[in-house]
Length: 107
Image (cartoon, rainbow, N blue to C red; front, side):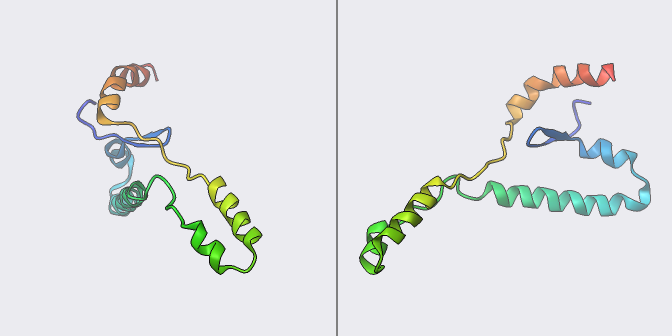
């Protein structure tokens, strides 16, 4: 059990090796493709910046005829929050293994 690779997505833990073992051989290749798409999308999301880029609002205020419009956009831009997926480090997963193993044994 300790040698299985475990991926974390939000609060779900996916054990791809265990899932693959339960699938019929005919669909394992398709599942492998799904897994690679999942991992590539997670990697591309993780590569995004954690904060929005800063904007030179004075530049836009000097060029736009209605400064109230720029202030409105500035307020809305400041209110935007980017939800981030909370991942766990490998060290945190190692610390969770005994509890997860006990949970699996009780099922």
